[in-house]
Length: 186
Image 1 (cartoon, rainbow, N blue to C red):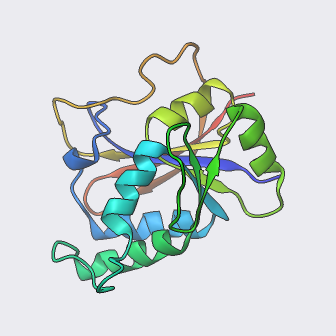
Image 2 (image 1 turned 30 degrees about the vertical axis):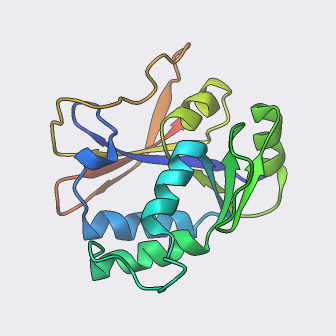
């Protein structure tokens, strides 16, 4: 059975708005390693569309945008190549190596987890909250940034019940960010 791992960047004051998190070579390298360990990505519509706009190579030129640093290339290639499952009731179709997930979320994700392989990887805010509510996330990783944003969305706002976690790993980055990995307590 494949595990479902969740990872997100968050500031010290709980903001998970990607625009409040500085781009960092070490963090991109870490994200590449995370994605490479999974068989597929599981995204909600918003995260899928945001990632597609930022990381899908332009069809016309195949060249990367001016804002992309050379050290971002491995992340761009890895996320571009990854199999993606997109949970959405509003999208009619997806491409970019993606497949729509419809119907009962719990049953659909359990079906994906039962497939053989190394695991699934998810990010974002809304879908992971639904997955946490259903007890479907096997590992949580919070990459805590040494920044106070003072605004923005926060994680798991409105969660209906506590999810108790056990720390299983910690990785410090040169920027002062710390990746904390947790598993749900039994």
